[in-house]
Amino acid sequence: MRFTPVVRRLVTAVAALLAAALTLTGPARADGPEPIRVLPGGGEDHVTVLMGGAARRADGIGVVGAGEGPKNFWLYGLTGPSRWLEWSISVAQAGEYHVSALLAGQKGRAFRLTSGGDTLDLTTERGGFDRVEGTIRLPKGTSTLRFAPQADGDNTDFKALELFPADHYAAYQRRVDAFRAAGAPTREKFSKAGYGLMFQFGPWGYPEHGSRPSLEEFASGFDVKRFADMVQSTGAGYVTWSMTWWTYQLAAPSTAVDAILGNGDRTAARDLVGDVATELKSRGIQFYLYYHTGQDSHLGLNSTDWWRAQSFPDEFSTTGGGDRQTFFRNWKSVIGELGARYGDRLDGWFFDDGLIYYPAPFEELGKAARTGNPNRLVSYNTAGMPRFTEFQDMAFGEGCGSAPKTDANGIVTEGPDKGMFAQCMFTLEDDWGVWHADQTITTRYSGGSLAAMVRRAKANGTALSINMMMWYPGTPAPASLKALADMKAALEQPEPVGMRNDDDPDLVYEGSWERASGRAGAGDYLEDVTYTRTDGDSVSMTFTGTGIDVLGPVDGQVLADVYLDGTLVGRFDQTGPYRPQVVLYGVRDLPRGSHTVELVKRGGPYLQIDAVNLVS
Image (cartoon, rainbow, N blue to C red; front, side, top):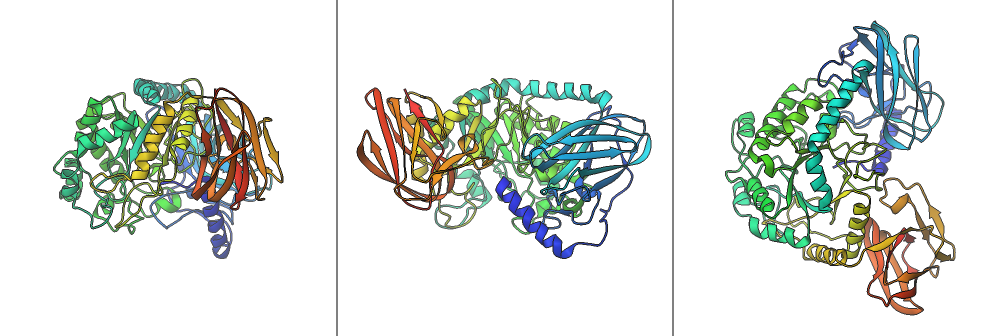
């Protein structure tokens, strides 16, 4: 669904290697009308977006993923002053303009934007993708904007520049504030829910063994009450249900979709989605919808009638331009119809494929998304990049990296999702959903680990969405149900008195331990771990309380003996794909007093300690 920071760096590196063999001599220029007209800022969606792919650019700068699918990713290769970008722009009236650059560079990296005689210097305040902002004066008429790093250094990835007349910026911000204020009542309920379940479950799914049912069989064969009973048993306060995902098929009727395609092959007669929403709401459980655009690059680009009907421009992946009016018109038709039908039963939208949307008329799309419910929440997936618009309420949060910094109301205070409500979604198992025959479901988290994640999210004001797989006709894996039951039971126990990081002075490391810090995106508590490769190395902690959780990432096999108050109490063997903040060892209901827990590495490539959670 999105690139993690690690995958993003890998994609960029591979793209750079390919470009080295295909580099053109001299500046490369993207096709498109020039000069670009800078909008006056007096109306909705009057943000002028200068896409990186549409710029004239120095030799050695390339576009990630160009021509490989419909998405527009970012530029790579901005390594020094000789790696510049230029746009020819036309301004009706000279004036000050607010600038927002969407880019990813090392912390403290300096850039310069020049226009006529004016200069704006921008400096990154953090590593990774972010918005870097300032103000520049643009002259009347046609001129050239140039953007480049101020000094040689590591690669910088670049998405776009946004321009907005400074004298209209306050009015623009008031509209943003009004949009978010409308969603505040729903956001408060969402926050208090604490955690919820997400299901990429739909007509694309399969039973544990056998063939996939038809769309009508899927919609008619689902037991809504049984599903709602299961959700309620987990203590989840909300459900996020996929309207579309692996395939563009709706388990609901839609005259809009039927009209776009000229047939009803992709919609169902039964409104299963509405039935699920109604049943959950009757039990006090909020209901959200996830929506995939239906772009079919994972199925074979332009292989489906739905995506062909969007008339999506081929040049978008390269330049970020082209005529997307059909796509947006169809989107508003479908989203508006569904929103009007579900009304107050639908609390919010999670829109995937942000790289298809941006740049977009987001104010207009936000109004369409709230058709039928003015308090509905809105979120767009940015694939790890900065927020694409302020006209949304909550972070999409796919993959759950390190917890964002938030205020007392759970609003992110810095970084790519600044200003939005903190929300985090992650996979309980080894995939987001069942989409092929004989697909297994492997549960990745224990109940104790899930409980620790929920507690940390709650302390940070973050809503935690646990994505759960199901086979048709709605059958979860037994291990996943057990993990959720164990999580609920653990959450009913006394809360820990607090988290202690791996560098806490009460943690005593014996042997050849090392620290790894700055692990942004890995999902660690405070983005660091302490680790050892050597069997026989130990870590211990003496604490006062009735219980403790020792947390660390699992990547492959982790094997260690556990001693409690000097007595060997067992050996844990955690094995599987990478997952952060796993409870390696946890114990409860000890006699209140002083206790010592010790872990001794016995096998596997690493033993990694991330944090401990103490129970008073």
